[in-house]
View 1: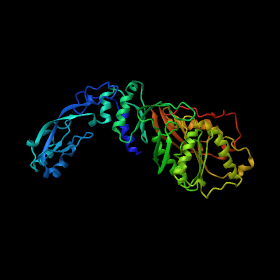
View 2: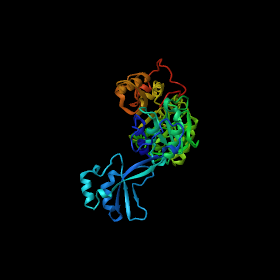
View 3: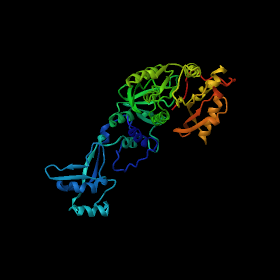
View 4: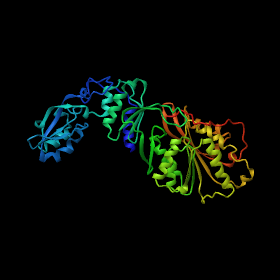
Length: 449
């Protein structure tokens, strides 16, 4: 699914719905409609038209293009039955009379023997098929209110978070989107919070088929999954790409909360060795499915279905220990990367790195570079400072000198940002004596957007 559609949808999301009832190209008499009634969208309007000879059309069209009447399922240039003429339909909200055309354009038209005599007003009937979903929403939903929040598309599914004042319009909103967006077959309304262990949303199908199996393409890889059982956010595509650009062939990636593999799968494609983990059994299932369908070199890929804490304390610890013992090798210049994309509580798992290895004999043999990318939600006047403080507080010692980047990934809500903190995980943490810092949560019970 291309991001162009996602961006175009967002143009409607946050604007206030205020439309004058006198607007010409707007349905009338449908405000407050709960269930779609297409017949009520019929409207007769007068449209300015230029009648021109067929042979002159190629010269006239470039002059008039800016005035075209652009509607869905409507051709602005139409033939006149039984005559060698074309009708150029113009936007009545721009043009009401011949003199509304710019002086330059009128002069250009006259050079092609087109003048005010060619200009007429014509009655046409517009129907539901001619209105865009944005125009319909403006005409139907409450004025001076936001339409939705969190409106995007994953494969054939459009998912949205309807605010309370819009819940009564669920059937109409869903049906309009299914009708108007060709690639959409299912519309769901989902809770704005992730309220269980496995980071999947509670959702209600409000239009279309009850089919949650989707395939999306991102970073040259295909990802198939059941959207109702795993976490996927199309708005993180660029962030996935940013991290992948940090990775070089021969690097090692530990993906602690990997989901269905948006970091892990492309990383293997870049010839990195990847250890991917997720607690959700459905994410684990689709992670392995995607590894096969993307034809990964399985010698570079290992997957785990563990709690994040257990993954760090076993798999990650074993790798670092074996590296210090010479049982694991890194290519010259290669780095170890750790991604921790569970922004609601990922910072709490940083406690696991403190005193991870107790064997002091390995301290002198530790010479690898480990970079951790941990995500969190932050609010306040200085969200970057808040994120930095969260990382330091949870890891249990001041690693300010080892922080290499603090990046604002995206705005989650008016008072919340998703932040990525990148830092070098050094021996002063891994071989540090454990203190009384509390344990991270065993389960990934979280609130997310």
